[in-house]
Length: 78
Image (tube, rainbow, N blue to C red; front, side, top):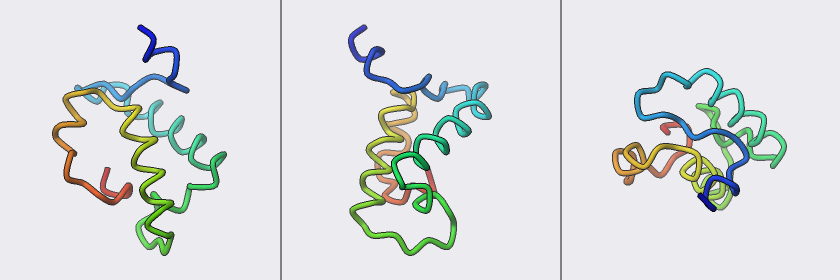
């Protein structure tokens, strides 16, 4: 239960049924953290910013999706 208190918004459900609201929340939060360019297709952001973005996004997806996307290194692909 303590993990839920740390989340800024609801995690992405494994079925994807809350994808639209999740992606909007994720974009707003990444924009606030000045990381919005990390999820654009033609980005030239630093590897550190991409890593920060990946850590943030991984904290907000279902455990089953974390396993599925374990090897993904680019937040655009996530």
